[in-house]
Image 1: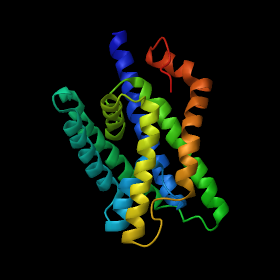
Image 2 (image 1 turned 90 degrees about the vertical axis):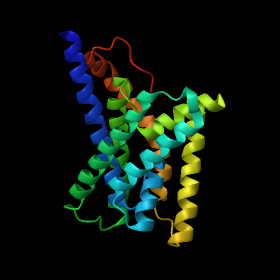
Image 3 (image 1 turned 180 degrees about the vertical axis):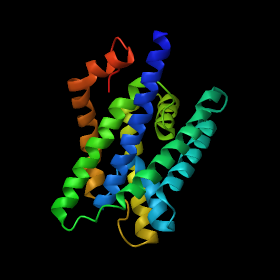
Image 4 (image 1 turned 90 degrees about the horizontal axis):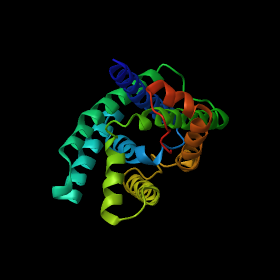
Length: 223
């Protein structure tokens, strides 16, 4: 009975964390100062084609899963195909949060834009803090990082930095060629790359023990 209760709590934090993360992404879009590196390519698809961000995120998730299959081949685990439905849920959350942001006026000046951007990093970090330690299926981009780390024998943190930089460069070049502007890349992208990891560590330091007790985990996962 207790095991089922803990699973229910983990699911609550898992999907709650994903929803909070997507709200952070939607807020970063509202700030118009650039999105987080991991969202830069889907948002580039949005600004270049006019595609809705949730749909772009779903397509990006499917493409990343297919890339994992090509990279790992026989070592690819079928269970990781669940990253596709999770990506669909994440995309739907983004659509919902994006529509929610439409009810709020655009920030009238740079100060409010910057404050919104900072707020977005807090939401993204808190979402990561909640969802990652549950141990369920990761989002497709994170699954790709794990696959790349396994293939290259590089540490996960090193692979993440490299992939974040590459995604930002791809987004920047695409936007400059297609729409002659920075598009998804801005000061917010750089700030998010610096702050989110630090904020996750702070949340873990302040609230990690309470989170772990809630889901019945004896030892905190290092974030």
